[in-house]
Image (tube, rainbow, N blue to C red; front, side):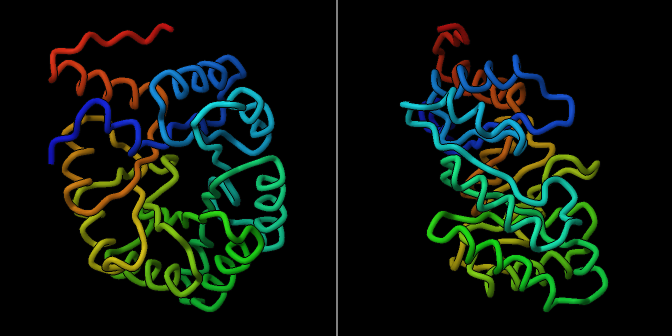
Length: 233
């Protein structure tokens, strides 16, 4: 699959979700998101209100996170965070599953944890982050199954905080598990246009990519079509 430079931003949730993100970087992300019309922008919950003001009046969706990045908080905390993010104006919520419960085989807790967030922010879409770096292929499939049973709109591969990147094989496993029932978002280690296009071909619907990597990928697409790439307004 070869995507036009005009199509690329509609696949990418641009993000600034590291622990050391500054106000300046959030402002730059918002500027870039608006200039190139990235579909959605995310930052950490403490900065969501700031990002909402920066994106106001644009066509860029506002994303929120719950249980990010470890997923190892109570269901009540995830729900509270998700509700707050929705009240600020978030159009989508990305939540991290309880990875420890999944690894322990407590599938009921994992499912109920996800469903509580889905129900709390309905009807806005919820993307469930599996954090595949800690899972076997079989566990990835099981997590996808639990997510589908919980009513999510997307299953998402990772937060980008773990050391193991999302690969084409990851997307293939996730697509095999969910079929056409729900969408897939890839995040973590996606840094080239080739990787993005291969994953899109395999059935990936959305990508979570940091500001710098998103710009690099977009520049590749511009260069391929002989279009001058200018980051400045």
